[in-house]
Image (cartoon, rainbow, N blue to C red):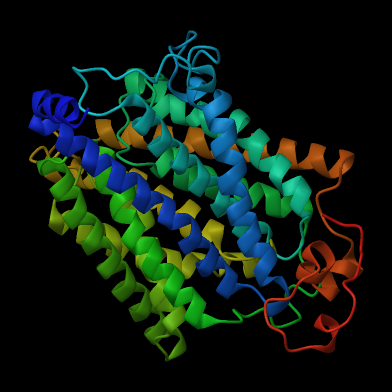
Length: 432
């Protein structure tokens, strides 16, 4: 048997083995983004909600991957049913017909499917930040499953699975500015509006309770993002190398631009701003990393860092309670990164020139359409879904339970054993 395995390995093309190894590593990096996001969000909420916040991300990981294997991948990457809107839900049902090795493929199709499923995991997890501190855990899990099928899978089909946005419109999105960033940001805005503001929003201090966790989470997200973006090259090649460099640079300039805005506006450059600036730069480079030069990537990071630093304050102006700035960072950053392709795309990288490289406004128009349609679709569908769940099974916890803290109410736990409440019998609030 060992000799047979050696012969099989020797017969496989070296490029295929390398591409498979890289995609395995990239998928693991994207998986690491889930606990990274849990740390990032967990540090941003109040201490009475940190476990619930982290559980919402880990819960999304479990639910979304199960749904993805059963039918989500088919909806996103199955043969188009017509009009470029959705894939055949039965084609890869339960990963049917995907387990046998294809000697001509650069990587196993099951690996690609798992890699794409982890994109869906992160997208759903991001939405949790917009409705932190006030949701039932059980309903959140139900929402995660339904949203994956009704919202994420269609948009992923449009831009990644050969649907109308990629095939007919010709929009560019290397790793998820539409399907991941704009999609999650618009969904977060819709969910926050339907569920309403937290008790005490605009009156009580709701600052991050643990900035160390925030910084650790941001670091893990940055590390994992190389798998997210460079892994989307689906090969260990020059494109992956360019995307790797662009991802690194956009994170750096996003951080610097956010801190510059903070220093000018508030007089201080903060650790929280540094972490947020990194994420803003990474969000914006996600769609554009395969279209811009390294100089373009730095400009993308600067634009995203500065614009998102200003955009996070919009929730106080318009009085919507986006708990952890999903709208200000992911929706706005996703819009910046998707639209700027029409300005900064270079034919030396992607074969298409943007407006600033003499390519005219044609690609810019395509990017605007892709961004606008994704925003409207995600917002509308999410608002309807959250409204239905709230009025049937209930989505938001009771006000008195929110004040007490969703960690105790839903999970009968606290993150820090600092209060008498953790020493007695576990309470039974009946929520979650």
